Image (cartoon, rainbow, N blue to C red; front, side, top):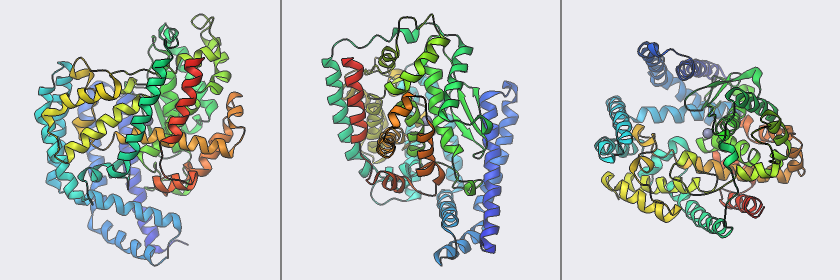
Length: 502
Ligand code: ZN
């Protein structure tokens, strides 16, 4: 039996969760179906819900209740998942309390100025338009790090928001080895000569058929349409209002077969994670991913480890060829597998392949670390960006829009966010390898279109926990060792051998 105080506290936590879910639903609607003319009123409605949630989460009454249940947790009077709810609630409470109201308002103003300046700078390929407002954002984020507090590096206080407990010092050696390993693989690829021909992916594919095929694939992977749905939006995303209502979006380009299909497999990976949280976590702060990087590992596991594998296409290609017989005539599953795995350096992060993608992240991570520690100033970003791009990718962007102005993240102050994308790739490879060890015929199952064992394994080992375990706990419990880049690099070495020597 839960204690009376905990029951009372859980009630508040659930109300908070409901308010946030309602706010997310308004956001989802805004990105999918809302008529343009509703924007102003919708902004007010969203602000009202967010303000109510914020007031509730920082009220004196909530604080007192939280103190009492923390004491109960310390005295061992709470069950394990209840302790988790208290711990996560306290973490959120501490974080939101550390920033003064005036600072939050100032940050919000700076973000909206910076967003406009970034858009304009990107349009006109001119970093100097964005630079003054970015300087303001950087100063505010360094200030925020002071408010949050940190042991040795102010950047850690920002990384912590997306990856609780992770530090730059822990990431740096992993990223250094990953960069070296990626360089070696890029040289190996260069040694093979001409890449596989992937021009077939960029012919013409009917939009409705692309969507129907992609939806059918994610349903077979295990995304549950009884508690989830798919709609269209300008930028694909996954949002949920509890495990029983998970919304995915995708976009379709007639002349690029990859976008809708792999985008939807990616979002379905996020969605299946959300659909798999244990029932008692519903409407509590534990009903979310352990970290951004862990969430990303679930999307990338399905998109890349499964969806770009030779085994998967041995099964899926005949279905795809049946949907697009003219376009894919003369191609077999192995040829298709090769065409979707061409790896070569490019300017834009979001268009980068599995291998070179991390170089984009490492470059940003290093610049952010230097900015947050005052070792670099905003004016130097374009030059440093281009120099690192040449060193890591062997290419120099011809203008800043294809370089340091390409991402929206810095305009909203999302420093510390990028690392999660690469962490997702490394975790995905680690988890997949572990699954292959524990389910010995897993690859054969994938080649037969049987995904239940893999999803079950993920549910059991990872999904059910939500945020009740943190990222390093999950990785240690599942893999028996801490974060490493080696699984990811050997996965790609194996794949490159198949794709390029094929
Ligand atoms: Zn994602």
